[in-house]
Length: 199
Length: 199
DNA sequence: CCTACCGATCGGTAGG
DNA sequence: CCTACCGATCGGTAGG
Image (cartoon, rainbow over all chains, first blue to last red):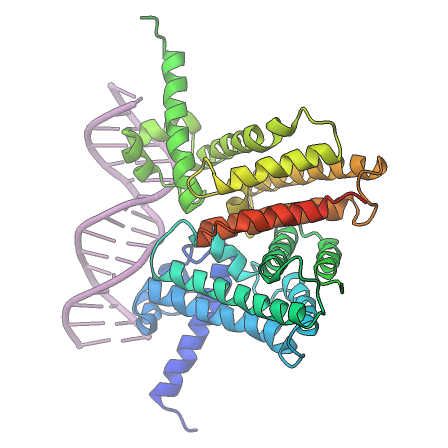
């Protein structure tokens, strides 16, 4: 039964992060409280915060987890498609699945956190902004390839396509989370398709 | 110097609401705290919360104010247009102005609060959902008129148009608040125009 | 990883 | 509208 403290520590860290991610997705990254989370996980407050140093450290770690979840669910399944329109279509397909059947109980985490943190300052806000910026650039790059290859019309341009795709996703997330609107997925799919229609 | 307690009370209430709306727009409706707000306004905590009964009462009152601001800035300037495509165009024009030059320091309040409250329960969540639902229905109704009059194509349908317009606004609000992106207004305008193009 | 504790602040109330 | 106060909880630390 090989066991060592490093393995145990990693297990504890992971257990904390799972519970923290759930709580943060429902109540926001600022709504995370060390005391309640410690109760949930079955640790003392000191034991809970130890691996992360501070609440801010925990918030940043949660952001890392949720970014990985998003990447695994939306980007990676589309990654083997050829860059350009085909990959954008695959991304949108998995994006809709992700938003309508979200692994996080509170829905798309980046939607929640961009809105929660856009009026604040500091490392958490910066990390949130960077995640969103990176994703918009990913969309933009594929849109650019698609336009250059003639797979998409030159108007709307790549920035407008990235903006539009992201906006549709935000709208779908709101419809699902606020209204439990099962018809919204179809609306988002059609909106995606319109934006990615062949010239 | 005519003065009476009712007038004074209304003045106090209004002074509180202005400060509360600013604070809530930056830090969220749950981020409102009675103590800090009392300091800001120059009242005691008891004096602050008195006119509203509880924090929840204050939150609901703030929602009432922000709904009025939105209506005054986006809906009312378009209200005299004929129902249908013309009015939707006017709404979108003022919506962009509202989002890019927002009277609330934290940007569109309904964008922030729908995301903050979609994972919660209670009267505040219900009020938030109702505001958003009402607005979507307003958009939908004009879209329906426009389609019936032949001003817009029957596809996308009225629900899809309302969904799309709202999504674009959410995307613009994010771009402005998170990235201070001055180019986003143009992207939103073009996206609005595409969705409202004549058949 | 724990217990035990810190000062600060939370929403709210009693009584005037 | 105030002062004075309530119990609960906040993030975090000391020491082990």
